[in-house]
Amino acid sequence: MSRSPSLKPDQPPSADADLIKSAAGSLGDIGGPFKHRFKHVATEGGHAVITGRDGDTLQRCEDEPIHIPGAIQGFGLLVALQEDPGGSGSLPVRIVSENAKRILGRSPQKPFALEEFLRHLI
Figure 1 (cartoon, one colour):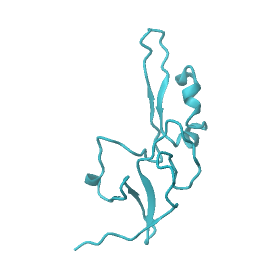
Figure 2 (figure 1 turned 45 degrees about the horizontal axis):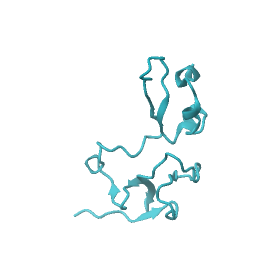
Figure 3 (figure 1 turned 180 degrees about the vertical axis):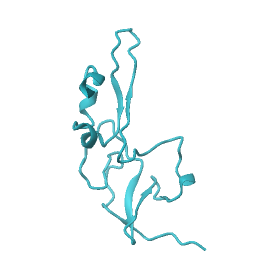
Figure 4 (figure 1 turned 90 degrees about the vertical axis):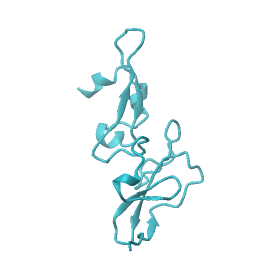
């Protein structure tokens, strides 16, 4: 018989569920194109777990809806580019994960303003 660990949220729930809150609260209320899908909480034993929108704890791989990713692991970065249909060769940014500041040194909003994102990686 397994027991669910007791969870202690790291932050009080936000009044606006559409804003992302990082576990450390470093991003604050950034708004815009960012959506809240999951929340990191710590168990009584100090282990970090992810809860879904409805507070369901995701502790096993099969619990996570892999067809709808909601979080990027801390050591990774997600950047989605779109090929310009006009044939100009530009690749405008369409999606950036919230940890862009830590990995790229730029806020998650900054890559959207760049005309050619790939040139800034070199």
